[in-house]
Length: 337
Image (cartoon, rainbow, N blue to C red; front, side, top):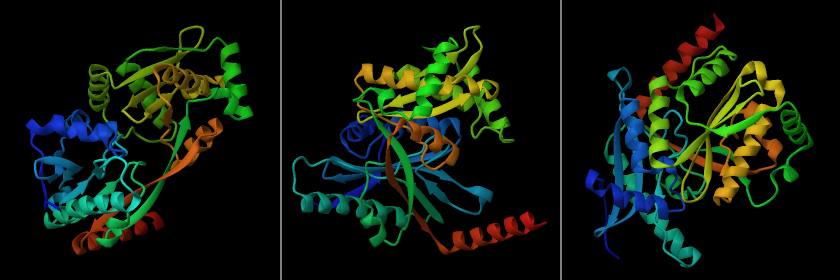
């Protein structure tokens, strides 16, 4: 068995990286080189793609966004704003038996984690995609696990037939009111809805307008997704959603709506139209990406999707643990005051 080498993937190897993403059960649109490079550029972050090689063959990988908060800590993460998944990818090995697949994955993951540990980061935070369900290799290397949830909706059945009565009623109400949706890439409209959505919660959007516009440009240029907008019969914008996709499934990337028009049923109707459009495109499932936010999970569970766990892991060192304790202590004291 050849020894594994983990090193930085060069720009001239990005096509090979993307081939790994497309073929691995763990690869998503958020792992693709275009998405990673664009995201890092728009958010002024350093990016490293770690590749695991057996000889000349790329058989595993892990992207890392790097940051240096307060010029005190060296942090690495597989996620950033509106990039929910990253983490480790492992190449498939065909119809191998379970034990062979487990040894193959563990060997690659262990090599990548040992390489990361040698970099001396104060903390590394990885959120693996739902495709990676076995994180025992991380635990054996001393990483701290955490569990998250998402909803996966199959698109092989009549959408409204599986939905709750409440969702069906809201969709029909929207149809009676003349709410309709069309495909339209419109960063300005989406940004306006996003600002109003977060203002309703007394919050600012988690991203900048330039980041949103840049990512929508990428999605449109690469044909890796679409934006759909729901409007009233008078032309007032009620809701919008951006969906992206990869070789495994579609993902509900980001959505926003007009607070004043929530009662019209525009949001359920928009989702219903998106799901049907995806089904017509040949997609068999969509990741609703909302299992960890109560208000969103309450809504999306109305479409009767499957609740699927996915796993994060952290590798904190002593300096980071002390910093976090101090920061939590200050936050706690501020809350009391």
